[in-house]
Image 1 (tube, chains in turn green, red):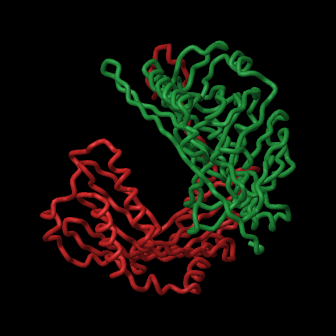
Image 2 (cartoon, rainbow over the protein chains, first blue to last red):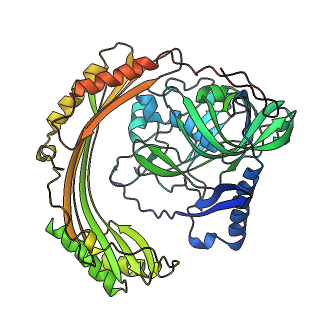
Image 3 (tube, chains in turn red, blue):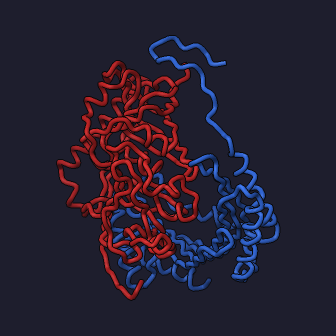
Length: 307
Length: 244
């Protein structure tokens, strides 16, 4: 566009380890994967060992895991993979096309308080090796680290050229498309929440009865209504401030903006998930990264067992 | 169509030359068109044409499947040579064999009527008019704050060939429209509902306005919806009474 010509090389690899284990008459399956914009030499012996151990650990813990009780309770989102919730339930609503069309729950929220002061959410295309990293976006715009929520205040949407023109702001380098068959639109790249003032230990100790959501397999969200559902494959039960048992196979149900308002503690252990995620929107898939520090949401509906 | 079947046969020859005992190749060409209309205006027009080849290889008792969109002869030769080499790395799979020719020797030749010629002739004006019709219907309720209508269509052609005598071609068309309406609920909720209709033939599809009316109904029905009530909560270490 504008007569600019850009060239880019975008390597993308992923290594899966999928396991099935049997103990007595019970069979359990789980998996782990490593992914990024790397060549095959990135998959060193150390990384392969880490991946195998992670997959084994996630699988074997399922033999002892139970489903927690259903109901509304505090949910601790574990650092890393819980970023899927941030991506789906909050990030999509901050893509400018949904707001330009007035269909996002965050339309007209720029400058307004949407989260506690210690919450800062960014979408960053500049982290080398991440699936969401870009040298230039698919419209030829330079990329950046975009602050979406700055200390609790909605600061920016993610813009492609069209929405930037509409809102009279500069594009954030978020115009992405799956291939030549598609037109670019605002998309997330690497979305995460920055570190907060608490520690993971403090957060767990503060929960009387609740769960830790550790690994997720899928989720979906209604952008306009903000309602989401996520499936947790691995997690932990917290009773009286202590982790007491592994849990598995549960849904959590909530509303994105409400969950963001209900964030009461954020730890200082932010990490991006090492596994690969692909985001789907309007029939287009693009690779993304996501992450989170350990985060406490004071209440969320957990679809465990009816007891 | 003849160029497609020729590409499929060329791929089979290349696979055999590279060392495959058997191969099955399919080549396709697709065109898709989409017009998106939002709140009284055309929002997006998208058209793409693509070609692709998929090939299944049977090499020394091993099986693999590959695909590419680069059908230039010199590139295809390199691609298939590499695919055959990759197949040799796999574990043997004695149960994977190319389908017995007896299974396709006397296959029926009946026309399944997969093509509506009028789909390829749809004009931009017609697409826009139908979208405008859906848009008007969706906006007939004043609570709607935004509506998006889409008319999409496509045509495809394909050909397949195998190393044990299969030769075949196919073509098809599709056309459809969809509508999504959004309403505002309270301060911050924007529930939406959608509907779509799609088929191989234009005739037989419901009226665009009927699709928009269904989308509108689904949207309005979502107003005031809440989570279902749940049973009393107990912890799983305690006895579990049944819900009523």
